[in-house]
Amino acid sequence: MTDGRPIEGVYLSGAFDLEALFGRYFAAHSDSVRLRRPEEIERPEEVRFALAWLPAADAFRPYPNLRLAASIAAGVDSIVHCPSLPEEAVVTRVRDENQGDLMAGFAAWQVIWHHRNMRFHIDHQARGEWTRRSVDEYIPPRDFPVGLLGYGLMGKAIARAVTAMGFPVTAAVRTAPPEQANGVTFEAGEGAIVKTAARSRILINVLPLTQATHGILNARLFSAMPKGAALVQLGRGEHLVEEDLNHALASGQLAGASLDVFSREPLPPDHPWWRDPRILVTPHQASDCSPVLVAAQVCRAALDVVAGMRPETAVHRANGY
Image (tube, rainbow, N blue to C red; front, side, top):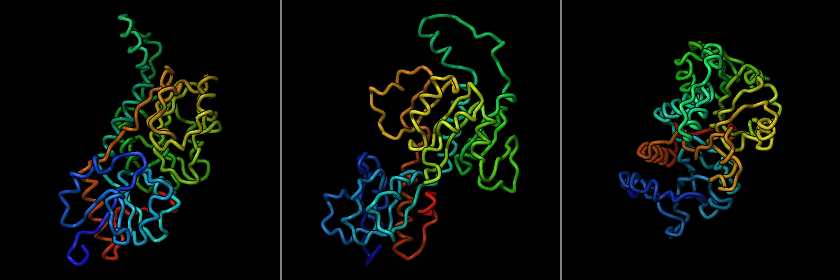
């Protein structure tokens, strides 16, 4: 608080009504912070922090003393790349262990979807047909390697879940961790991502979006994967080169894909991916943060920055995580 008054904050999003989503959860912290919509701010110079998601290019410009831009989720790319974000502003993200578990369950389900060709059963159910797949088509999990791009909170949770089902996992990392995880091997350093893809019947992406990872899911990567492999895209929409995925599916290099994130959201209703039986589309909901936790962590971060401290949830803006 400043002079006994709550710290002033503003909701900034070009895509969602953040007050409708989070207002009642921040109400529990009204003695510490006060969040309002931009049109309700009488004195922009008093605003010290923003709760943001997909902010407009000029969203931060009216607030000369803004010290904190807090994401509502684990991703911060739309905030750190916003041209009006002040140089001195700290950027934070939400860190939720429960979110990792949710992501792990979603990823494990996608692995089963592709490994067991569950689309086959759904199609036959729709026609009322009792049709069994040939047992010759089954491949034991231990012979069906899974690749993982991203080995932070989400990646580690996914690795635990997938290896528990008997699938060997290879994770691409900058530096191999000192501790070894059961069922997980690592590809480290230059070329680790392509090497991991080359070993993967299913490739799961949960990388952060950075300059180095923009467009990383491209023709070169798909061509390195075993023919007939599948992609599970849970990272950021900008990781994927859409035309390259279309070509890989058309050629049979990839047999299928699960897509939860897109460069344009919502995915337009006339987009062909909705009707492509090789693609499973979900609406960016592989894992959601608890709104109670969002409010608690953002309020703690606001108090920290006003007190001159760096919040535990702060990210390195250059890295994007």
